[in-house]
Image (cartoon, rainbow, N blue to C red; front, side, top):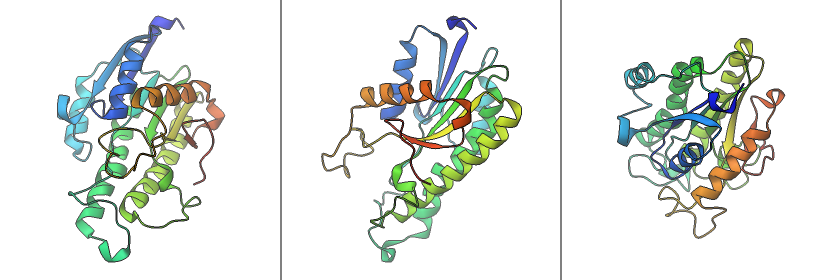
Length: 229
């Protein structure tokens, strides 16, 4: 395969991390094309299956994507911040978090996973979050966000197993980006940032470049370390 044959798709490309990932790929000479999709630019709504199906129908992956990166997701739902206690649980807010972070990702896999290359290494990465780890949860709180990301992690695992049957060289993973300085995190980070969006993109793409097919279905952080489920 020549470098010019590499194709990428970035979903959620208008957000802080998504736009940085898209820019990094567009400036990488090994990628012949980088297609971007987002709610603001393409009216892509991952919670609306018809919207996802239409977006998939309207893009041309050439001979298939070498990399699909899903950066879409929400931390706040319905204007409500993460819960600190169960007395703050609101069903509609929790449902919205699941709709975007879990169901939305499932729609992305349903319509875009078949567009990955079948005869060579191909990567589908989805942003998750360490707080979605059940094994790493020692603080509690943030129930809607944590649970929706935990559900996403299970969806990623299922997608990896299914995709392996079509392409033994596939890599499907969940990624924890760290606390990145974006509008999504500014109300909650309290200055505890790990990287800028540009540094984050460099870190995450570096991790993806190093992963092998036998690591498909796993959960990694921005340094390439495995995150417990």
